[in-house]
Image 1 (cartoon, helix red, strand yellow):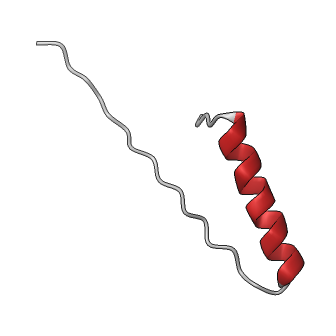
Image 2 (tube, rainbow, N blue to C red):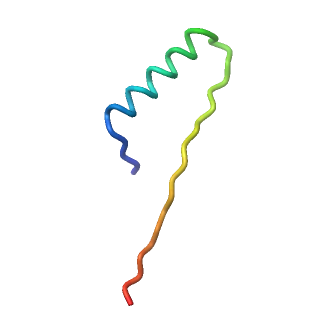
Length: 42
């Protein structure tokens, strides 16, 4: 599960809505990355 804050979520939704409204045929690039770390106690 990935959690983002409400402000970032709303900004993303608004950006997608703007892009779809200006060009419904355009593709949307998903710019998302996750970093997974594992800690080992010595």
